[in-house]
Amino acid sequence: MTATDPRYRFAGTAGAVWLGLPLLPVVTIAGTVAATVAALFVGAPLPVGAVLLAAGAAVALVPVSGRSLVEWLPPSRRHGAAATAGATRWTAPLGSPQPSARWTVASPGGHGRLTLVDHDGIAVVDDPAARVTTAVLAVAGTDRFALLDPGEQARLLAGWGDAIAALAADPGLRRLQWVERAGPERDELDRWLTDRHAGVDDAAVADYRAMAAGVTAMTVRHEVYLALAYARRRTGGGAETVAAVRDALRGLLIADLAARPLTVTECAWLLRRYRDIDVDAATPLHRGEQVGPASQLRRWDHLRTDDTVHRTFAVTGWPRVPVTPGWLEPLLLATPPSVHRTVAVHLVPVPQAAAVRQARAARSRARLDAADRTRFGLTDTAAVTAAAEEATAAEEELVAGYRLTRMSAVVTCSASSLEELDEGCRAVRTAAAAARLDLRACHGEHDLGLLASMPLCRPSGRPR
View 1 (cartoon, helix red, strand yellow):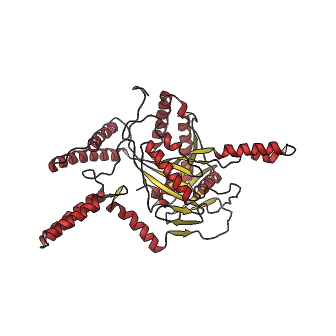
View 2 (cartoon, one colour):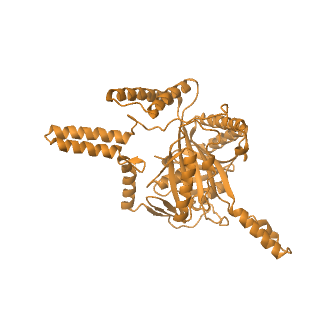
View 3 (spheres, helix red, strand yellow):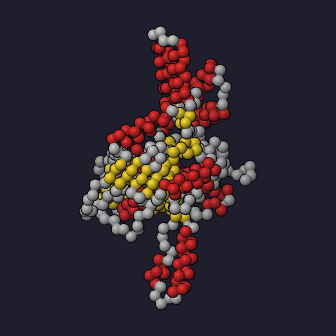
């Protein structure tokens, strides 16, 4: 790479409230100080106050597996409550498929109920609870991105970014989700020969099948989807969503992205393959049939739906140095054998007025944080300086006409056994580190992570 090659930078991880600490540790420290002062005021010995203060500081500041002790309380409480109530095990009621114009998508764990509706050949996912209707697009671009020169890569990225920005400018858009899913190739290459091998030498057929099996074992299928969630209207919501999707198709085509909306059957099969990676493609789907899993078992470190186990990681840190256009290749090309890997990025447009207020608040918070550090005698760190610079740059970009979008991402691994899942997760975490991404396991919340990986734009699936 030369000095003139394009580079891209990411903003730091948001969430710091005071002195670089998140909300829960700050609240814990404040509560501990108040409790210590109250204990000393009522006559408690000084050692008791010192012990109380030290215990509160340890709970708020001592990291355990990437989180402080107080930050482990919410997932632990939710998982414990679910285990006590028996909600970690979920089984769908048995029923016979009935002819219907809708498909039912049951979301286990109390995350609502969705329906797939056909509008002019386009599948629309209706979510009454979230008041959104979602359309899923299958997207294809160039398959030689890694072989292009950096200038051409930068041109394609700029075009894709402009297309996404144009979609996000739609006032009716509530959420945009980009999903890249990779896994072993399931299609049999010798299917054509199986139907037409009559009269062919058996030895030649066997050699061809052996060759095809060897190629299939080393083949990885990559699929890219784009889910667009629009505000749900009481009347005509599906028709308006279809019109918006057709406008989006034209915008993506200008950016050299070929996209087509999924039909109801294709969308149903996509959701079924998410919950069971070994599902037989020959199994027929019936109208009115439930597309969701038949059973779910939630554990602290994984989630089992039917015969597939899943583990989800939230992206908690983006690259802190300028990166090249192909910076994400290590993760996108990492597909361990027998493991399906999904990367889902959620983008939520922020109204311009709210974005300006948030930028001003971030800049004021950075200044107050710097003043508090000076008052307490704390030295500035590189992270504090970078946060202040990013707050100023964000406000300047908004003034220049750019738009603010909240972004979160999850990485989900799915396998047929825990042994394969553990091996695949190690490979994926190594690849994420090579891409300068920080991953944190969604302990006790893998059901939310799996929902966030599906192209449904579920608000409940947003990583915490």
